[in-house]
Length: 266
Image (cartoon, rainbow, N blue to C red; front, side, top):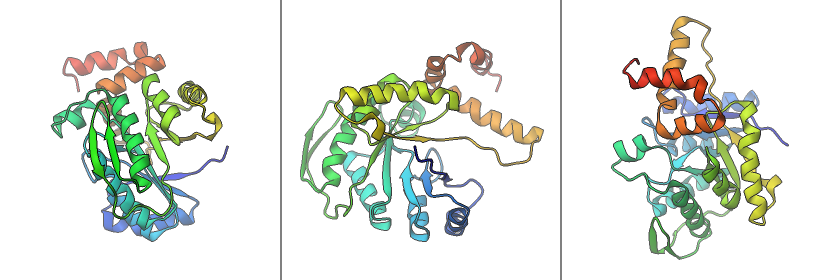
């Protein structure tokens, strides 16, 4: 298996205007990919446009939310980055979480696995230049066609935590994006994906694994440790991430933290 070292963008503490120079230096040091995230800061496509124009890195979103953008808008965003970096862009999609979808964007976080599956199915056709009529369980599209479809196929990756979404990744994705787990947890998650891929008549070995890692580059200090703890606890108290940790078998270890959070000790 080929291992690829990737930069995660946008980088905290650095304005987007400085990302081109940072990305060029990262590429010189051996980074070959740049994968973007979005939550409450910059969107996931803008950093890739900057990095893609400045380097020859492969680019990917990890992830673009399938609830906060309509399917046609997602296709247009992907087509734009594909023009910046022809043949070196991967579109990672996922469902996000209840706070992002409902509290911040006024959506409904319902049937996430179905929504991701249907979005992937729609995007395959739309990014291929088809005029798409799609009737799904979570959305419908009537006659959308990209006027500037990408010249090269765009691989679609699926972000997944628990078995339902992991199976979707294996069945419809070119890759799977995993997060909030240790290296020892990866085989458990990937086994679900590969089993689903095999049952769908696909090659399980062809499924690429993209793992997001949280790295603290600051020197060890109480302040640095506190910053990491705050980041971790904020995420792991979100229902979807809590359920994931319980599936991984960490309920007993994380129970005191969850109880403290719920009682207001934050």
